Amino acid sequence: EREDAMFFVLCGIVGVVGSLLGACFRLAIDGFRSVFLPKADSLVDAMRQLDPVQRVAVPALGALLAGFILWLIRNESGAGHGVPDVMEVVMIGRRQGRVRSVVVRSIASFFGLVTGSSVGREGPFIALATASAARLGLAAKLSDESYRILTAAGVAAGVAAGRAGTDNGTA
Image (tube, rainbow, N blue to C red; front, side):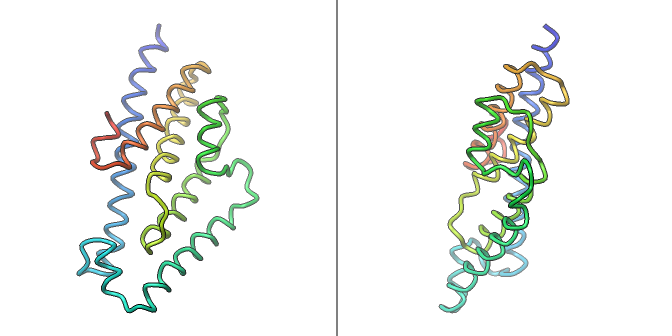
């Protein structure tokens, strides 16, 4: 009974944290763009301002930087592989996973996104929200079933935060 009450509170917290992480990620992308291309309103506008050679070079350099960042954590235990790793946490209830690797993968995605690579922003949102939910579930010492449901709530918060507004993750 006590776990049920805590579980529902944690689900609300996961929604709020997921939406805040999504908002911060989105703000970081916009901030990066406004610093380097202040006259651009969007990534498309930013690319239009570049010379044709730069339109090819910028995404290529971003992909190279993202790949290098991922290469650095390639042998790290618990590094996971994105969506399959998230599914393993939710479906199997695996309680191991490194928040550090999720953050590093999200940074790699960030550099891909700000340089025009075609990586979706939903991946980092989902990974960050799920890692936060998993960490909360571990700290609260939830049962296996509650832990899996809470991490699934993290996935839902990440998907919702990636869709549009900052309040979607809470829903």
